[in-house]
Length: 207
Length: 207
DNA sequence: GAAAGATGTGAATGGTGGTTCACTTCTTTC
DNA sequence: GAAAGAAGTGAACCACCATTCACATCTTTC
Image (cartoon, rainbow over all chains, first blue to last red; front, side, top):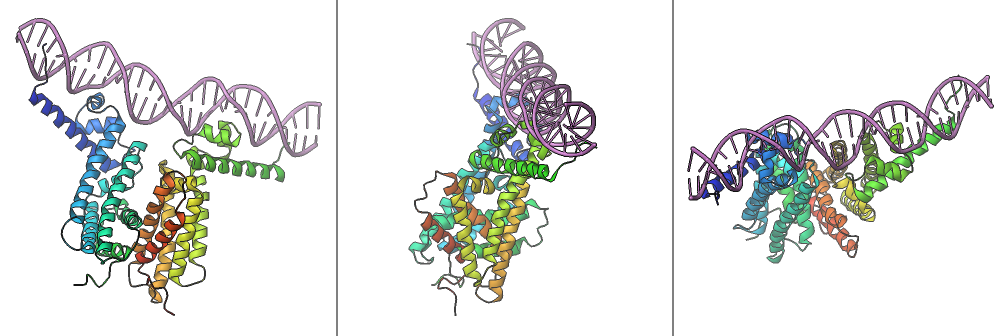
């Protein structure tokens, strides 16, 4: 035997793969999925098109990984806020604020994750991640119903509506230019809408 | 001169075009945009692939026409209900019910219109039609705010949330098999959610 | 019925972009 | 430093499908 991957070499390969995913993410955020060709992505990472296939079996697999990493971060952040301290309605409001703020701070990527046309494999992944958002929202809503701060309702329907509604509200600002003149106003209206949607008492929690 | 399109011939051509659009709509409802190739669509209409180009300059133009016709019908129906008689909240509830029922009765088409991956031209059309839904919802919400039956709120945000929320709630049932076991339950929860989202008094209109 | 002019046909064409592969370059082991 | 094996290269390849076009067929007019 005359060659065995040394630990350092393995780390180097993993780093190269990470770098490829990061660069691909940047390209997707910049030009969208449709324009992110293998050549363009490889070019951005400073490698040849063929080298992409050292790390991923297909373009679709790379695209899925890009989506998964970026969307996974968002699910995680939202989950931490929604499962954090405070009453359910307050956590819901905080979650919506955090989600929207992060999207508005990284519009290209948020648009790619939420709405941009993509190949079927990415579409399937998107569907899957939406289910995770729904599960997170549903959990908070159920807690609110249980402790009486939210009225009886189908938590799954409310969660789905929140997921879709927040996305739709954000898509327009994300798609247009980056004039965030009244993003504070938008955040306030969005959280107010989310609380109404879950039936939270507008006067705030009863002590 | 030896040939001039006779009125009957013109009618025949228009009928052929209509038939093509109808068949294409059926194919799209059945297999989605991505699988609806020119050959498949032409085959469904009983004409040769080349003949499609007698009626449309490109596949994209045909796809846009398919979308426009089907989505236009939905916008029209929703508009009639939302602008019909009754108090704003009641109209909103009726509109949501009608929209959801129609979607559930024609799942394949509804899914194609709402969510299925599509070429950019169709995506743009979809965006445009969503704006129409939003405009319709926003009008009702503004009326409700004006007559005091709905609380003060940003009508555009609420309208966007309704558009996205209703779509998201419906996508899951549309995507899965056609087991409409509890579609009545779903409709009730969906309208209840929409009313909460707009801040309607759960006890109903004050006389 | 014959000429003119349109529609209908479907196999050939062409552009796009993901994927492959013979080859080069680098890394490890002895 | 030389052999063995892996990663990296990028031009060539290929599948897919919308689009075209030379030809056939049908409609109108005289």
